[in-house]
Length: 242
Image (cartoon, rainbow, N blue to C red):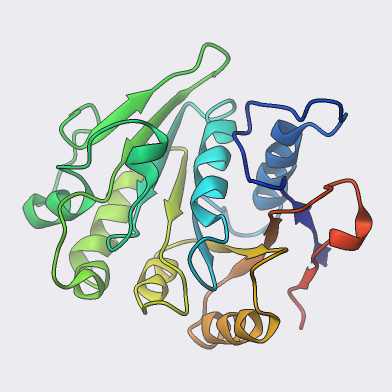
């Protein structure tokens, strides 16, 4: 089944609508949320990681906006910044990044207190039915891939699944580093973000092949930086059967 999700020109906040245009960007992310929920009938999709071919294609904006929309439906939603090399989620949410995922992984043993604001920053919108938590990337580490490939990271995600109804992971780009593969392997599905202006088609195809080769469940693709979301010529299709 082909899926097409189009995101606005600058991947702005999902809480805003485009002036002079009936296109509601929050509705795009609701549609994306619904597509994710119904992407698999047999297996529940609870952990979704978001990646792209290269930097600056909008994956981090898609991650944060999707997390905000999911918090309208789920009681507890967690957004994790797994881009340990070039993190940005702390900037989006105007918070610090002194302590985060890397620090938690180094100190984590068995139990997690999600109300510990040392690691988990909590946000709640007036219109939100649930709570949105943010786990920033944390302190810089010399070996991000080793940390994300560790059994401890996998165990951490399993524990977090017990606490949160939905988890979204902002993942590094595929072509830049190899950090994305181990993160995708602990996720239930992957969203692949492409830019209408910046993405090289061959590189995108190669990245998708790499994901599939490693057994990653690619849920579909999101197209960003679109001049006119209502213009069909900017649609991007990804067929899971290909």
